[in-house]
Amino acid sequence: MPETTDLIPVLDCHNDLPFALRDRAGYSVEGLDAQRDEFHTDLVRLRSGGVGAQFWSAWVPSSIPQEDAVVATLQQIDAIHRLTARYPDDLQPAHTAVDVDSALRAGRIASLIGLEGGQSIANSLAVLRQMFELGARYMTLTHNDDLDWATAATGAAERQAEADGLPGAPGARSTRGLTDEGRAVVAEMNRLGMIVDLSHTNEQTQRDALAASRVPTLFTHSSVQSVNPHPRNVTDRVLEQIVTTDSVLGLTFVPAFVSPALLEWTRERAQVRIDLGIDDPSAPISLTRPYQMPDAPRPGQSCEDVRAENARNHVEYTYGDTDAEATPEAAAALAAWEASHPEPQATLAEVVAHLEAAREAVGITRVALGGDYDGTSSLPVGLEDVSCYQDLLHALSDRGWSRSDLEALAHGNVLRVMRAVEDGAEAAPGDR
Image (cartoon, rainbow, N blue to C red; front, top):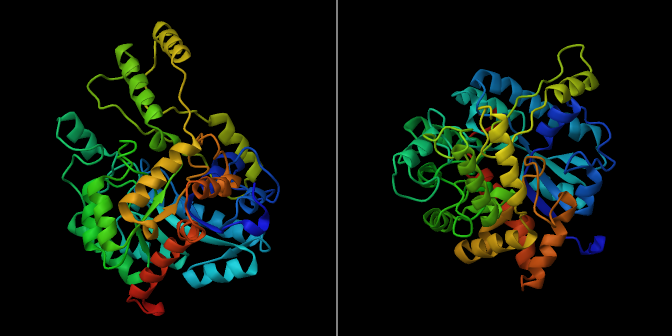
């Protein structure tokens, strides 16, 4: 680990600690000033990794009813506010690029909020505006499921297009993208000064939104399809539009998105499950996992009580699994296959490969970092938690990236997008 004086401040675009706190701590924010090995994130390791600004993800599953998603998103935002208030010597609330600069000068970590998925606004611009008032400064247009107005890379439209044998890259087969309603959402986000995040969306939605937005957009946590053809990764055609719109691609560390070997293993395992009669052979192979919605404390219920309740109800999911029950024979055969085909591990070097491919495609001024810590069950070897950011920057330095290149990647490019979106806002404060 480099000396503290050598740290390059990192503005990370995406961290799911708020949902991990809901799931594993009953929303308690206590004890995060010590190392917490049940999480990827705590204040000790944020400091060690040189994280100077963090977009916390106010994420809830897109599979729950949208009215419930609004309530759960408000609980997520409340958790972020409580987290920030609990550690004022370490975390500083931030809404703007100026706020981030102020936090960095004060030696604190700028605490920002992003919404992960349009399900959180339940088809209402009024809800969008109120989320903005509560501090949300980006919204990912979809999560894993399609909305009425936008199409996900892993949603029903893309799965059907795959089943129909339509040509195209993964996540880029369906021609369904943004509807007129979706363009109205983008327009309102531009008006407010809220960043349009295009991670999780399919290629057509990305192309439509890039064309519709008056200001640069951001991919908070995606990688490059030419390196690994996962539907959540960005195609060459969209990389070209990132250049023409001066948008920014935040590269992520999610192993399935990073590692071609792991992606192939996941597909092979899914096919084995089909061959063993565990899963439906007529359904497209799923590359995303289902999510269980843990409880939040009810009035009068302690964080510890709800944590224990969630632990009792917790279900572990593996990519590609469905609710179908395997026979004992099929389960044994699957276990034997897994024993003879160990799951590959993603590596820091593979993340470097994505970063270098992205830099080659879009330029040094249009790349950023969005680790997705606490939003995935495992991380690449060498990037196991938030303390590892400087190790990644050192690996890039060893490959010839200059100090200014690394500063652009680590924080400068996202701050540029924030300033452009803020400057392009049309709403007066009272109209927001």
